[in-house]
Length: 52
Image (tube, rainbow, N blue to C red; front, top):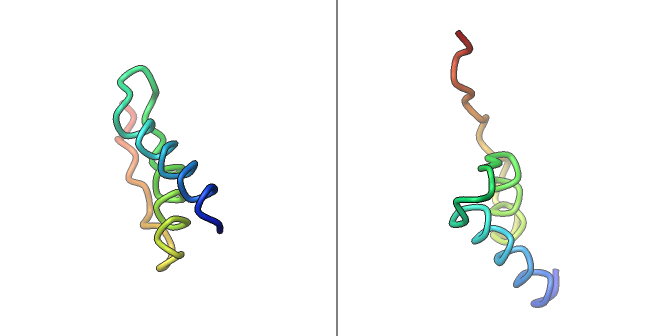
């Protein structure tokens, strides 16, 4: 990944984490973190709240 791609992914990550108008997407956040960190391992499973 070149620096421009990395910067784009970090900008997307910052938006997902900080923009209250955008719904949180944990799977996408973990995916982006893995990509910009060099893929240090699989993302942990996402815990979903119980329905009911």
